[in-house]
Picture 1 (cartoon, protein in one colour):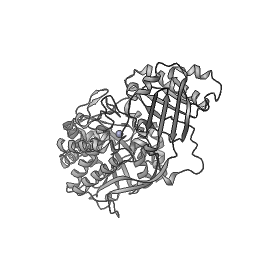
Picture 2 (cartoon, protein in one colour):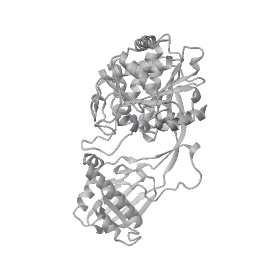
Picture 3 (spheres, rainbow, N blue to C red):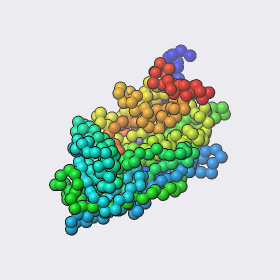
Picture 4 (tube, helix red, strand yellow):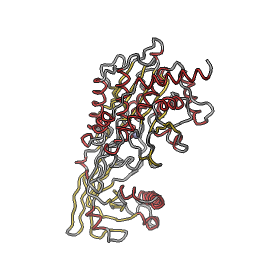
Amino acid sequence: MSIRLLGLALAALVAAGAEQVRDFAPKVLEGHVSFLASDALEGRDTPSKGLEIAAEYVASQFRANGLEMPEGSQSYFQVANWKYRTIPASRVSFGFTMGDKSFAYTGERFSIQTLEVSQAAEAPVFKATLEDGDKLKAMADEALAGKVVLLFVPTAAEQRAMDETPRFTMRRQYTEVSEQIKRLTPVAWMTLVNGTRGAGVRGQLIDPSRERGGGRGRSRFSQPPALYSSEMRELLAPLPFGDVVGATASVRIPEADVEPVELKNVIGVVPGSDPVLKDSYVVVTAHYDHIGRGAADGGGDTIFNGANDDASGTATLLEMAAATARKNPRPKRTIVFLAVFGEEKGLLGTQFYTRHPVYPLAKTIANINLEHLGRTDDEDGPQVGRVTATGFDYSDIPTLFGDAAKAVGVEFYKHEQKSDSFFGRSDNVAFAKVGIPAHTFCVAFEFGDYHGLGDHWEKLDYANMAKVSEALAAGVWLLADRETPPKWNETVSSTETYRKAAASAQ
Ligand SMILES: [Zn+2]
């Protein structure tokens, strides 16, 4: 076939692909995002009740639109039976007395990341700030034995508002001061933050099949609890570095409980139409989790709604699944729509899938991952009518998506810096690591409310999102309908690990 003929055939195919899926309604996308990112789902932390509700919502949409369940399965869920290690907030307590002042707090005043046992009863109190690194350095080893250290630090919001240089200095000071405090072996230490409400206790997820034997090698107080108390900050602020004369503190952070937890990937399938190619797969992913709740901002908001990250990708996945399932004929290959848990906790859902693949990985030709599709106010400037991919030159998939985007009037472009640096930052990488060509498609890489309390559904541009979703759906269609599977680009050295993984999977 001549190049010109090939071009014509491709254009026709693109037009057909685009035609097949030209039905993304902005209002429907807005409906999905506004539910998933509502306060009722409390930021969809992994694990949480909000995450379970989101999983049921995704499954209900698959059901409503006639998606098939994975072969041999009685539900849309792929369940990970894991364990969760946490401390009930009510069992964490802190008491402080100084003269006629006394305060008593439980867990919701804290943000606790590391589940270290910590106990002290009416122990002397020692105050330090981030500026006190040198003074701490001058103290003898174990000089704080038996004492409770309170370290003044800025709130997360104050840290975010800082310019880069002071923020960098602050982080360096924090590391130095923390190391010194550990060397001085207090009975307990915590950071003291302005505010009246912390994020509570963060538990730890454990995959029992990957639990290592023997000691867990955790260092004592690897991340201290943060106590939110404006009252104590105010009381102690005028006092100098060192012993807080006449004050005592009692601390109780008990041993964590371990309980079983069910985490769910949600899978809806559109079977391929070709008798042979239907046994090969394109996997479309989006993470339906986000980061849950945090310490309150000035306005009392504590919920990280995660509208753009990644209710937007999830909404597009749902509508792409619905549009594809409605059509006849369907693309030649089978499309697996996979909404995953735990991306924000370290790509847990996609890694679980690639360790326990529902469809053979050797027959999975590509992964298309959807992120940040609703916000056009990228930190690099407005991104209306355009979409991009990470690892732009890593495989021939982006070229195909470029053709598809063009056919529906969307610009498909490469971001010179972020295209490569963001490749490893989302769920596509779990597939890349097992050799499958995989990219994340997004409108904005970073936006003002990224991982902030203000990532609200009202801020998304749904008309633009519908247009971009159409372009991506056309790309997925082309990919699934094409005879030739995509390949990693051999001339790009960054793809070497992925090419090796692909070769060893053969
Ligand atoms: Zn995300």
